Image 1 (cartoon, one colour):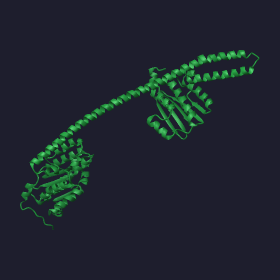
Image 2 (cartoon, helix red, strand yellow; image 1 turned 120 degrees about the vertical axis):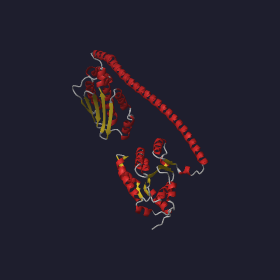
Image 3 (cartoon, one colour; image 1 turned 90 degrees about the vertical axis):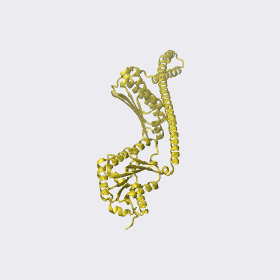
Length: 474
């Protein structure tokens, strides 16, 4: 059995031990913690009292090595029940309930350990030195509230048992500004605070005063730097807010300008359509009548016949152009009628097989919506003809109490995947036609959906009608 050099007077060892209470040590190096801990634990064990250590494996092993280097038999103390070492992680797991240390579990488990230690002591009255790192584990996990709660449970238990408590935290775990309040709360739960070893290494009072003054200077400089940083951050926030406001204003202005341009474009189309119909169309009618009268002449009947055909074609082209600019059927009968006329003519002009599925009882919509839907139909079918390589297209119109939906689907080659992704992220990159559709739909608070793959493309526009109907926009 290993022999231990025990002081002749145990009271001398007790007098040199730390005051009984709850002490917290902040350390920079593990070696400093273990040196302090071996003195704290070894003094009580050499005096015949008990020690309870709840620590990580590294610190438990390091403590035993230091105690044995001082000639103390830890194996004998464990056999006598005066030295109880527990794993901090495993013990903490048994104490937690709903993310916090539970008072009943703590009292039952830790109280049971302290009962064993008390029964094994040889001192009169019995004393127990207890060291725990469970609070440091909680703090390292970022759970400051649970760490403070566990410190409080230790204080409550110290009212029942003859304890000298000590816990320890690495100072590097308190490196952020927002740690300050929790740091003070932890210190408030202890009767004694042991600073980092670099301060305790200062031997004279003058050195310590110099160190404190230096720390105060650093703290003052840090406070000034933090105040300056907060001022800069506040200025940056204000600048950012101003820039965001300016961007929002300019974006709104651009949208209003875009909507205004579209409105002016539609008005100009309507004016040109009237001019073509009322002016040039009438001139061509007069020319046709004159040509009919001149055709009675027996000379050059072939030229008169050719002129008559050309005038017929001119009148047809003018009528078609006028209707495309602004179909009169929409003013008289609404979007459904204009869509049927346009789809039929588009199929004849383009050679594509185009079908229209629209309800026969589709009622009148606000003028702005009918005109926007017609322009969307024109733009979408124009894109089908120019870019898709499709042989067929389907047009679908649906309406309920809240919105009207227009869909144009083709069987073409589809939009490249990268272009489609760019459109979904930025709303741009697919050409002027889709951009125009997007602006028209946005002006009416509607939604544009664009889907495409190798089997074709679907353009879907949904426009709310309830609010516009209430506004009386007819």
